[in-house]
Image (cartoon, rainbow, N blue to C red):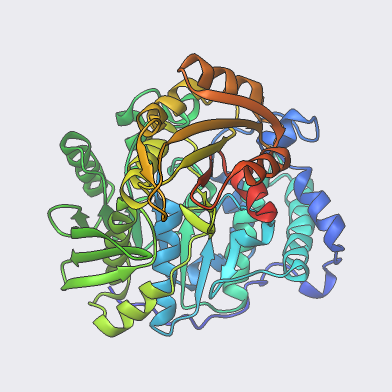
Length: 478
């Protein structure tokens, strides 16, 4: 597969840009927030959730002469890891000299983070301009009867990303699925390479009650003629995914363990040392400045995916340079030291279990561990804390730099995320106490961060996790 020429005509062939009324940044964001998303529903600013369909976003993109068709798309889904794979893939393609658009969700601190080109976020003014266009286009589609219901919040943001990438003529777009795959707004784009990182139980009320149901939703991103990068290790699910992808017209399926994999994955100072094989090459002893065994796995998927998009292997020197530059905010991110502050956006049991393994392997030594934990509704704090298995980290021997010995301790600091879907921090602390852990409810995230920083010494660890809302808020505070 080769990257096509991205030369194209202007995408406003069905609408006159000179007649678009520009909204201010504030008005543009108010317009966006008036549309259906989970929080808009709960605060009464928008109606009921729309039925799963690609009709609305396709109507928008069709009116703009399909801006998403002006560049090749690498699309990524999966229960966990898709954000990391999106970021790593972007760094690799950028190091190759390509102009890369990246669309991810959710954001940590600013909405603009969701739409990036060459790792630079869209500006307020650019986003307002995109939303101004979509505001006018939505009015036309509704008034003309071409749409019965307004697009959703996420559909508007996805359309804005596709339009922006066309405007600036990117060479390739890396697009992260919001949820599921088959009916996710990002699936309106016709991806040349479709990636699935893994399958686990998450959003079961929407995607289905079993891993098999969820797998079938996620494999829905595979299009006729595309290359499917299959990262799930479970043999039964892997077979199901490959069979389904081929039935949907995939030109090729590359399976983890068979066609690509991470064959060496060791802790190194400041990250991991990994060796990877792909259909094109074997890359030994690559340094990746990310923490956790899972990031070695994600790197292997990213290399296989970018090679599939390029249709060739990658020069080792370029790959090395790309990987040393990788930064992924909020994914086992070291924000400061003495005390060590770690941020990780794990928000489901599978993600928490991966975090637990990474904590044990990469950061095994501490005197006191303070876990700031906040969850959204729908999460079971008992199950989250059980997956974190904090009891095994407490009451171990720790020797400081002066040779003094101490017994380690673990404290859970419950907090309420800054979201209308937040689970009260009191329920988190109660769950921790039921598991025999020392815990209390700090209230909001700033109070939790302030208490932890006042209590922690230079040999301690502060771990912030449970929700990206908590991580994003903490990132600003720390």
